[in-house]
Image 1: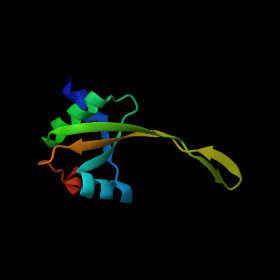
Image 2: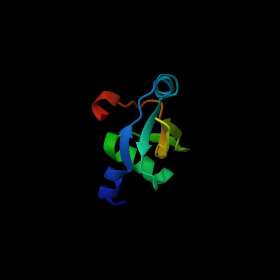
Image 3: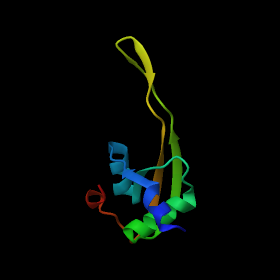
Length: 98
C-alpha cells in the first residue's frame, strides 16, 4: 500500500471517557479516520505508524448533530471513528501520538 495514503488515513486519536475505559480494559484505542478509509487500510496504517500488531478493527460512522444557535438551525459534520484492538502484548502511548 502507498505510504502517503497510510499517513493520511489516521487523523487524530479520539480522547474521551469511553475511549479511556476501553483502552484500560480491552487494550482498544479509538482514532478519528478519513471518511473513505477501510478496515484493512486502518489496520495497515496503525501497524505502520506505531509498529504494533493489530488484532481487530471496528468502524463507526458518527452521525451529524442538529444544533440550534440563537434561533438559527445548523448541523455539525459527521465523521468516522475506528476502534482498534491490539494484540495482548502490544500497547500504544497515546500522549506521544497527539
